[in-house]
Length: 71
Image (cartoon, rainbow, N blue to C red; front, side, top):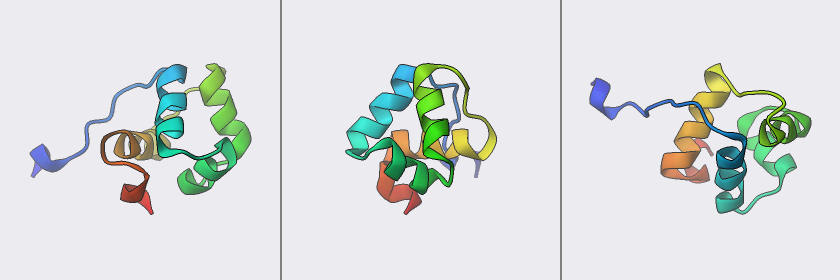
């Protein structure tokens, strides 16, 4: 049912950093959960790159349901 799906929205660099900080983890640990490199998380948080596809979906899940949702 579509109403159960997590909404995916573009996230600002500050929003990504806030999601990570709310989870209480470092960029390296956050990257491990998302299966990306720590450098990429840093680039997202500085606004140099934007997450897309599966990474954006995972970030949206963590934003709404916490890091436990993807562990």
